[in-house]
Structures are given as structure tokens and as C-alpha cells.
Amino acid sequence: MLPIDLSGKRAFVAGVADDGGFGFAIAKALAAAGASVCVGTWPPALGIFETLLRRGKLDASLAMPDGSKLEFENIYPLDAEYDSLEDAPQELREQKRYRERGDFSIDGVATALREDFGDPCLDIVVHSLANGPEVDKPLMQTSRHGYLAAHGASAYSFVSLAQRLQPLMRDQGAFLGLSYLASQGVVADYGGGMASAKAALETDARMLAFEMGRGWGHRVNLISAGPYASRAASAIGFIHKMIKYYEMNAPLPNALRAEEVGNAAAFLCSPLASGITGTVLYVDKGYHAMAVPADVGGLIDSLTSG
Image 1 (cartoon, helix red, strand yellow):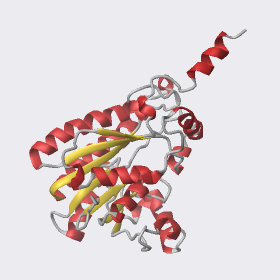
Image 2 (cartoon, helix red, strand yellow):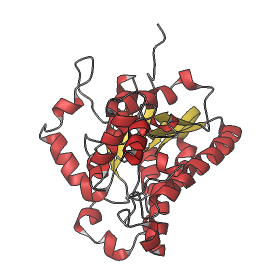
Image 3 (cartoon, rainbow, N blue to C red):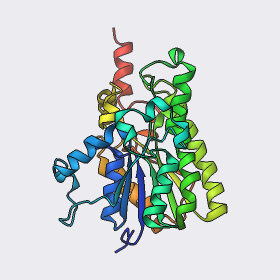
């Protein structure tokens, strides 16, 4: 038997605010493999997340395969649009959901982790963050502000996490991010600069794999996941159409499950993947391999009939 064993390792998963997304599934898989898990949560969602946990509303999702319950080692406020607290506008810092959270920047998380666990204290860093304020707009209607905001929140935040958390990493650390097929081809409704942000994320991951591998022996990989109806993805509006399209055309014609992404993440962050870095692993039921729709014959027949 060849187990995924992360015993004695600590992971930080950035971008967990509920039990419905890939970030939560990854955190749970890492914990199931033996890691202790800390998470970073967007301050406006943190209060609700803490309340749901405290009241037991997420207990069913927190149930582990061995019958135990997933316990986060710590939950940190994190707004990854800001490298330091000074970068955040004063009016944001004074908002109710921010002002009592202390330093919610990436610097703040690094400082808090060091204070809580010492230095070095991390083995795994997961970037499960993406945001584009104009994602529902076609590229031709996207403003410069919206475009750059998408890149900052969805791509540069991975670089910033690597810069600030690398000093906390123990030997042979693993960094992991989440991408999407729109980085490689057109997904018509994925707008606001998000497609190019994912392309930037993939390029940055390759560069980071080289720099962090040569500099410290760490690995950097991405998972390109298929469509999944998380709360964040559902806000885009076309996610259910994408899920149906994948089911019709992917080699494995069934809907992607979040735990499948979580299991792949646990493998990539484990010693079993010690020879893998700079890689984008597709966890999309094989859809990325398709050059044309699986039902193209029927489409051609309908176009040529009559």
C-alpha cells in the first residue's frame, strides 16, 4: 500500500469561507492525510464562517472518513488584495467587518503564523483565491481598473503569498494554486480579465517553480479544475450551463466532485509528488483533451439537413 502521508506537516489554505468550494475540499483532504490545517478567510465572510462553525451548521461537511471532525488549527482574516495593511484604503480599514480583525493583509497572515507557530512552521501553502469585479463583462467592456483588479486578486496574490510565506517554509515545501481552462482557450462568458489572469497565474507558477526550486527546494504546481457550482462560481451566472456542457462532452461524462480536486491536491502536496513541479494538473474529467464537442456529428447533421 502506498499511502498519502502528511503527518507532522502544517498547511495554510488561503480562500476558505464556507464548505462549498475547492479550498474547503483541499483543506479537508490535507487533514485526512494527516496535516494540520490553518485557513485564511476574506474578512467580510469571516464572521458568518465562524458563526456557522460555532453553531455546528457545517458539522456534516466537517465529518472525516475516520469518523472524526475536521478542526482548523487556526482561522486568519485575509484580504489578499493587500500585501501590507498600509496598502488598504483607510475607509476599508474602518469598515465594521475589517476594523476588528487586525492586520488582514498577506503580511499580517505571515506575522500571525510566525507568532503562533514559530519559524519555520509551514510545509504547504494553497492559493484558492480568485476575484474579478467585472467578470460578468465582456473583455471589450472591461475597464482598466477591473482588468488590473482581476490580475491582482487572482494572480499576483499567489506571487505575494510565495514571497511572504517562503521564509516560514520548512524543507521540501509545496505551493499549490487553482487555475481554469480559460487560461488556454476562449470561455466566452468568463470576462473582466479573468481569463488572462489565469494565464498569468500559470506563467507565474512556472517561474516560481524554477526560482523556489533552485533557491529553497520547494515545489510549485497548479490544478486546473473543471466547472463546479461553488457559491463563488454560481455568482458568475453561467456555471450550471458549463457543468452540463462538460457532462455532455468530457471523456468521463459525470459532474466533477470537489473531493476529486481535494484528493489531487493532497497528492501534489505530498512526498509522492516529489518529482513534480511547474505543472498544471487537469482535474476536469478529461475535458481539456477534447478538440471538438463529443456530439459534433449530430451538430453537423443538423446543419446540413434539409
